[in-house]
Amino acid sequence: MKLRMLLSSLLLSGSFCLLAQDFPYEVSVITRPYEPLTDATEILPGEVWDDPDYFIPIGFPFEAFGTVFDTLYNPGFVGVGFMDNIEFTGPALLPYGSDLIDRGALTATSQSQIFYKLDGTAPDRILKVEYRNAGFFDELSGLGVNDSYVNFQFWLYEGSNNMEVLFGDREIVNDVHFTDGAFVGFFDAYNFLDFVNGWHLSGTPDAPTVYFVDGSDPNWQFGPGVDPDPDPNTVFRFSLEPFVDTEEAALAAGTQVFPNPFGEVLSLQFDLPAAAENLELRVFDLLGQAVYSERLGEIQTGRRDLLLTGLPAGAYTVQLRDGQEVWSTMVVKQ
Image (cartoon, rainbow, N blue to C red; front, top):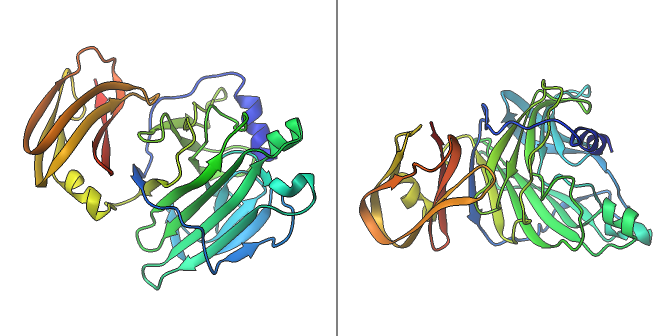
C-alpha cells in the first residue's frame, strides 16, 4: 500500500509542527445517531477486497482546497481523492486512515461492504459513502484473526462544500493503526508519492485538535491520531462556513471568547437566548489533555475571566458542553 509505506518510513524520524497552518475548515464534534445506508449502491459487490480501487460520482460540483471536482477516486490507499483528471494530483481526504480490508479475507467469502448514495434533492444533496464491517490488514496478516472491525461514513454537502466523518459500531481489539489512534486527515495536493500540506486530527475524540504537517520538510512526521477511537454516534464536522445544529446554535451565537490571541487572561462573555442548564467549560492543549476545567452550572448572561498564567504559549481548544450540546473554538496563548 503506497500511503502505508510512506507513513511507515517517515514515522521513524523527524518532527511534526504543532500548528493548524492555513487549514480552511472549522472543526466541530457533535453526537448524532449512526444509521447504515439503505437503498445504496455497493462497490465491488461480493468481492473480497483489499486496497480497493474505485471511482464514485459525486453527483454535484464539490469544491475542496480551491478546486471544483465531480468525482471521488480511491487508488487503493486509506483515503479518497477528489479528482478532476486521470493524472491525479489534488486534495485527498482520509476519513479513517488505517489499512482496511474485507474481514472475509481469511475465508475468501466477503464479510465487508462499501456503499455510496446520493441523498436529497438539489441544491441540498449529500453524497454519502459507507464502510461497513471493515477489518484491518495488520490484524489479519500478522495475527491471523479478524476480531477488530469498524463502521464509518463520510458525507459531502452540496452548496456549502462541508464534510463530515461519522462513526458507527466498532471493536478495536488489537493494535491496528498506523499512528497512536485513528487517523482522520487531509492533504491539499497529494500524488501518491508526496504532498504539499497535510492536516490531521489529534487528541481525544470529544475535543480533537489539528496538527499541521509541512510536506516540504524532509523530516516531516505525523503526530498522534485520535485516541481512543471515536465512540459510536460521534460526528467530526469540517465546515467552510457556519454550519451548526439548532441545539448548538445557542452556544455558538451567544458566546464570545476574547482576546485572541491572549496573554494571561482569557475572557468568555455569555449572552445566550436561553439559559444553559449545566454548562461545563474545559480547555485542551494540542495533545488533547485538559489543562483547565470549570463547572459553570446554570448560566444565560455574564462574564468569566480565566487566569491561565501557568500555560505555555501555543494553541488551545476552548470547549463548552451543556448536556449533548457541544461547542468549541481555537485560541492562541502568546
